[in-house]
Length: 226
Image (cartoon, rainbow, N blue to C red; front, top):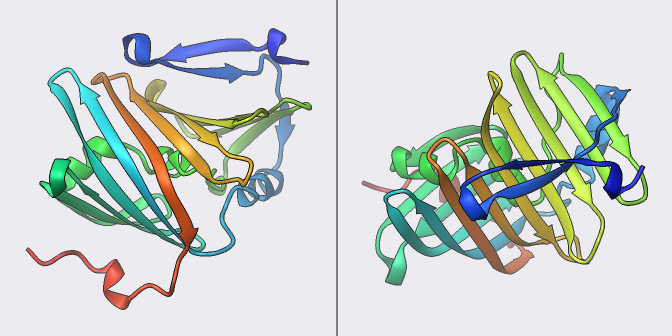
């Protein structure tokens, strides 16, 4: 089954929509299979990433630069600043939880869901225990679908240059957000777009540096002083 046989799902904000290629047929899968697939997207060494960001919603637009310090397997320090260094927001994310975020409302605007946050880095999350999992795969498309209670998480990877990695989160039947990340031949993210249809809002990220990190200082994981 190739791309012509896939149903296309479009969600998003006007002409800025992310289009997720969704298989029409899935097969049952195990948590072990899905975990192995997710681990193949996870960096094996700590990384430091720098990026430019642009956020738009119905109230206007803002942009700036950001920094991500990622310690394997799933610890991240996120820092973002506005134009010319104005404003600052930061968070410490452990897995799918924000241990702290300052200011919390600004971080939540940029990161409405942490599975989507990881997807913007090209990383799939492992399924939690008790998840019902389906899969699809051929020479072009790989797809995984997690059902956990009333929530659904879809991952779809489409081969190409660049490779495209999609994630969509639905909570209680409603779409929380959709991500499309472009991944280079070296396996590192080039750019990412997040669409949040309920606002509507759009976040675009362009990565301009992704290097192996030196050991992180202990205060990396502590919140900034007020």
